[in-house]
Each structure stands twice: as structure tokens, then as C-alpha cells.
Length: 475
Image 1 (spheres, rainbow, N blue to C red):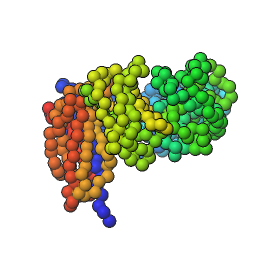
Image 2 (cartoon, rainbow, N blue to C red; image 1 turned 180 degrees about the vertical axis):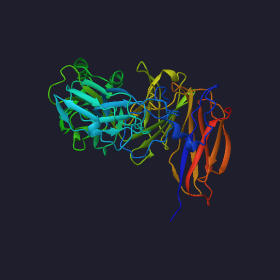
Image 3 (tube, rainbow, N blue to C red; image 1 turned 90 degrees about the horizontal axis):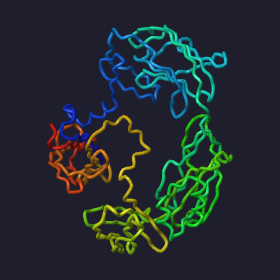
């Protein structure tokens, strides 16, 4: 059997001069263990612990030091969120001991009726959750003074509080916008809560109206919909049952494989409303491009390089017309791809270029240069520390065999995602046993782009190799 090697690219978060002196003192492999730790001055803990209030149920004990003089207290009782659903949430200043009779120590009543509860721990055991509570309901929560912390301290006092939960939420939204779909793609993802069914209308944008549509693709009101009728044609209306769990926000993949009207290449606008007339003046919307054109662009100082390939085979796509469009809708430059699917277009006004649009007789696709290069809006990044500069590493793949060439690319950006002057980057490539394989000083170009490669030895040790990078002028 052919041996395989997993390559781990590990980047030390880069700060400007005067950054944290303790940064990068640990080996890059261990850095992630400490990323989510935050310090709580009121907790009485001698070392920091994560105060994240989602996820739970893990049985491992909390390994921390606690000031023996710290009193065990209830910090708050409120309506919170657990696993995308409303929950009663109790926050403590110390981790709570597991294995206690919580149904007796924490009593919950509604309309003077005792409710059977199953409390769920947060990861750090400093919060308890009782999920799937009812909307617009009065709850009375009684926490006994006999409840214990992990260091066997009981509460300094009992706590009793009344809570009225929020009105029932009812919403449905698309998870993403401006995606490229292939004819083989058969699902459209949405997120919904307390919605039993939705109605989707699919509009195909007329070929000569694409740029006009792109000036405001995020239409949501009825007036915008009336404007849309002049630039698009309604091609399909579909009804989808969701079977949502009550009061829980859930993701659904709507099947669209049997909608033949959206299989032809083009730009499509989609509206969505709950199928109960609850939205009278607003609707949710998204848009996507049905195409077999795949685009890759690189913007330089005086030109834009464009590679076009045929999807899903990733074959070179010759004779594709590529245009650079500015914010006024004007063509800055245009050209045809060569036999390799490549074209380079001169541009002296790159900051004014809004779109790169590629077209054939039967297909269209585009790249929005005005959008963030890395869209992280759907990811939970609240635990990430702020940094003035960061180096983003990426590679064609993360699994390599002995003797193969590994290519690593990097982008150095500031805290707003903008280009910065490239600085030398010190790189250490380490084997699975942490021994140093290679050390280089990595130089970037004027765009803050870094590229390097190395060959995996034919007798290389199998396992997780690491590519550790940090600014060369950092201590």
C-alpha cells in the first residue's frame, strides 16, 4: 500500500510591532489549544477558562485552579440559546459539580406546575441549560443553596427568579448568496424557525440586464420585485414542506433537481416567503449562477489574469469572452481565452473594476472584485483574537505521497483584509516527530502574496507534517 502523508499548515497569527511578547512561544501544533481561552475576573479562577455558552454534555472534568476564598454564586438566570433553540440558562462564577440531583436542587415551575427538567452542562461547567422552552411563557426558577461547585462549595445563597420568555420567532432565510451552481447540483440551503412551508419563485435575469441586476442583487421589498419584472422572467414557482422542530432554528436543503426551468445556464434570482401570507411587504432573496464556467482571477498592478475551466471536469476552456466591468457598467477591457483557457487583460484602473465577467454563447459566470476575498460571515469567529496582520495559508490539497511536490501559498493582509507590504516570513517545516526538516526565509511579492514548494523525500516519515510560519522580525 502506498504510504501517505498529511500536511498540516499552521500559521502563527501575525501582529504588528509591539505585539504580544508571549505570542508564538509554543510550538505551532499546540497553539490551537489556547485560542479560545478568555479571562474572567469575577470568576475567582487562578487561570483562564473558556466562557463559551454553547455545546455541552462532555463528561471530562474541568482542570483548573480555584481560589478557595471565592464564594460560589449564581451570576444570572435568563433566556438563552442552546443548540439553536431557546433555553433557560443559569450562569455561575465557578464550575458546577456533576452528578447532583439537579431536578431537586433546581426547580422550574410554569403556571404553578412543576416542570421535569434535564439540565445540560456547558463545556466549562459554568453554565446550565434547559432547552426547548415555550415562547411567551412565565417560568419561575428556584436554585437551592445546596447546589455544589467542583470544589464542593455550596452556593452563598439561594436564588429565585421569574422569567417571561420572548414571543415566538418565525423566520426563513437563505444561507448564502451569489453561488455558482452546476446542472448536477440538486439542493438550495435555507435556515428556518417555526415555518412549516415556504414558497420559492425563480426568476431568470435577461442576458442584457445582468449588470443592471448586479447593482442591487439583494432585493427584499415588494417595490424591488416590481422593478425586477422588467429585467427578469418568472420561470418557476415551487412549494416546499419543512417539518421544522418547534422553536428551533434548523438548516434545510431544498431539493431543486427536478426543476428543469433552472437547469439552463444563466443568472437566477430567487424569492422566498413562508407559505402562510405572514410576509406582506418583505421577502427573503438570493441569487445564483447556473453555469459550466469556472473562473480564477489574479489582480496585478497593471493587469488582471483570468483562468477559465470547464466544470465539473476542470478542463481548459478556450475562446471564452472575458470582460472587465467598472462600477459604471462600462467595459474597461475584454479578450478571448487562449487554448489553455488563459487571458491577461491590461488595466490601469484596477480599483475601479467591479466585475470580471466570462461569457460564451450559452454560459456566463462572474467574479465580484468588490467583495471580500474571504467570506467568513457564516463562521463562528467570536473566539478569535484581534490582530493587525495575518498570514492566510492554503494549498491545493493536504494529503501527499512520498516523492510528491508540496505547494504552499500565503496571503498577508491587515485587519481589514487589505494588502500590506510583504515582510520576510520565517518558515519551519517539521516532520511528524517534530524534528526540523527544512527552514526557509519566505519572501512575498508587492501584492503580499507568498508561494513556495518542496519535495517530500521518497523515504519520508508518514503522519502529520507541519508548515509553521511567522514574521522573521518577531521574537
